Image: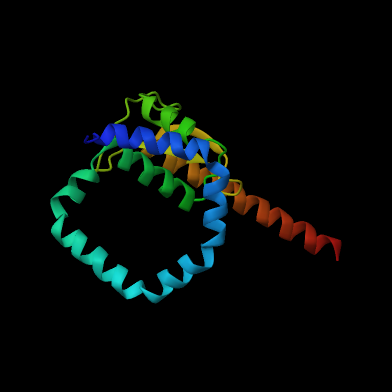
Length: 165
């Protein structure tokens, strides 16, 4: 009796649900062994990855264009930029479904050539808090305003420090 991939997946899913504690225990028990193995075989794994990428260049190229890959790379990019959120999926959905700039109401585009209509996620750099989905032009103008605001606050701080002495 041969099982289909879907049947195998379903079985594995059910097994994981039923045996969560058992799996957790096993992982904890073998954590050190796994760490040692990975450390010992680091070069071997690197070489394997290199060969895989060479042999599957087209497959990987196509994967980079899938919605799932685009979403994950965008969220990773946001995290690197310092954007903080409890639910990145919610932000991504809002980002994708926003069709017009929330400041100037121009229609937004998405894609490689960055134009003034390119969709941008605007956030407060100091706190990482998300503000709006804007076109590139409005986002750039807002960051300039933020910088100017910061400079004014710094100058006020310096001024008041000098006058206290």
